[in-house]
Image (cartoon, rainbow, N blue to C red; front, side):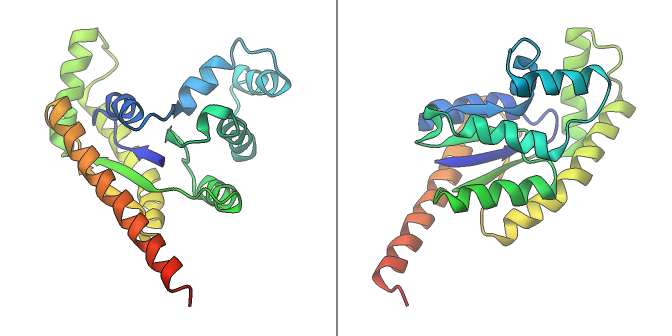
Length: 204
């Protein structure tokens, strides 16, 4: 199964990503983790990324696309993957889609965890208090949520138009949310299998 997961801060995306990966036996690939691993990796690409980040620069779409492509080419991704944190721009969406369709391994679904803004703010404020994050106040949290909404909405629209978008309420207990997620993804996968079978039976 080839999946993307998206969701606002505080929606439990990281927790659900791990559970989804375990459930379907696929690697959960976080671009944030990849970039952090590049701080110590000794490859030409890692050194290039370190130079950019150390200078305060922005890692371009081209480099990000290359990093993800190299990760998806590794053997553990042959049976599928779950991407978290990529794509973030429309250009990255186009590059990923072209690469996957070109290799005959298109996405099966794009999971978007949804959450009421006020409830997410309350959840993140409670987390900030527990973890002692004094810089996480209501104003900064709402700015982060609005930034996510602004940047992600165009991507979700594209995937919705492609018939790949699966939206699931991300609020509730971990097991409760994961049950919703699995049911929604299993349903989406079944739809895809039916469509493929119909296409084989009637190729015209």
